[in-house]
Image 1 (cartoon, rainbow, N blue to C red):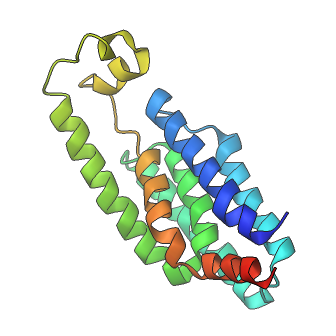
Image 2 (image 1 turned 90 degrees about the vertical axis):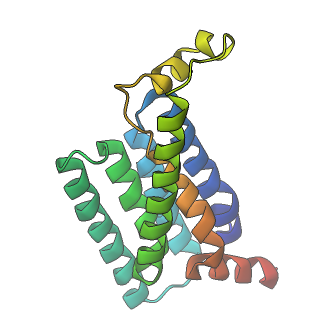
Length: 173
């Protein structure tokens, strides 16, 4: 499987699934976060990154895991969000980690504000028949932060070193 397929198809599909799952159930299955990380390992098998670059991406993933679980321990995000954040930081590496964290945070803030505002209004009859919308609308429900994590990756991904490497692989064909 080519690098371009992994970065431009597989990764976005997995992130979209994680966002949708979180939106519908307030959970992100471990399998999805593991698949995002495994797809990065497949990427490494087809793109010749140097040992130093690989080590920095792995270190960024570990830093993402530590930061994510610190936020989880403080009650700011869920465990699935922490694992998804770590998996995405494998992809973005340290070079783009701050930009990714900023994008995900800003989008998370917008998502939170939008949901809090929408929770102030009654649901339309059609929406009130959907269990996931009712759960999302409930005042005591959390915020499906996986949506912001995926959106942050979508915003940042085209500007990352990984994307440029995959696009270079595409133009080489």
